[in-house]
Image (cartoon, rainbow, N blue to C red; front, side, top):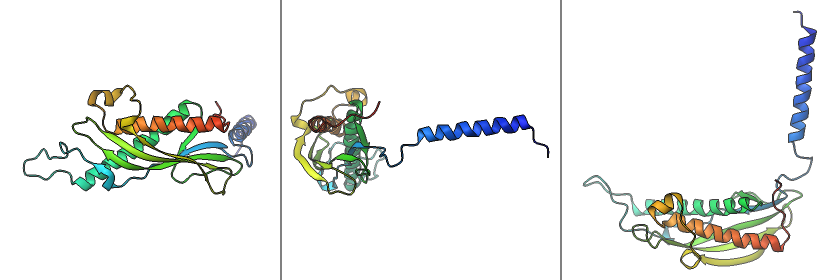
Length: 208
């Protein structure tokens, strides 16, 4: 088979360009991808801390049982835990920090990390989306390097009923202050605490 020299030269040039581009996208050897990470773990919860709204959970079909309370409580806990962690990461990211949501990540080789974790102590659905609230225990640790034991920087309790309420938007504004809205408020408050710690420790923001 005869190969066109011009086509072969063009293919070689394209391959060389691809190699250069891939090299530019790769981090420097040994350099961590997240040298100053703020890692947010999903807060622990149990169905025993969930107070269900007695006005919900019924079945629309006459004679059919509603959703079992244990199953409802687990769903409420999962949703609150997701909303809280997501709110913390979103707030920190908007402030320029390298926030990561992960239950397993830690400081990378050559890097360090702040680790935000905690547990729900009470999750109250309220009644008909009124007076819903959550109480959490928060812990923030510092990991100086990969493989080192995290050191506790602070631990505190937050109650959504006692913090400054933020204006509700989107779905929450239409349907009231439900548990997820309360968890988001707590998440924003935790992000403020984490931001204060980051500033005190001269924690750089993520590269723009």
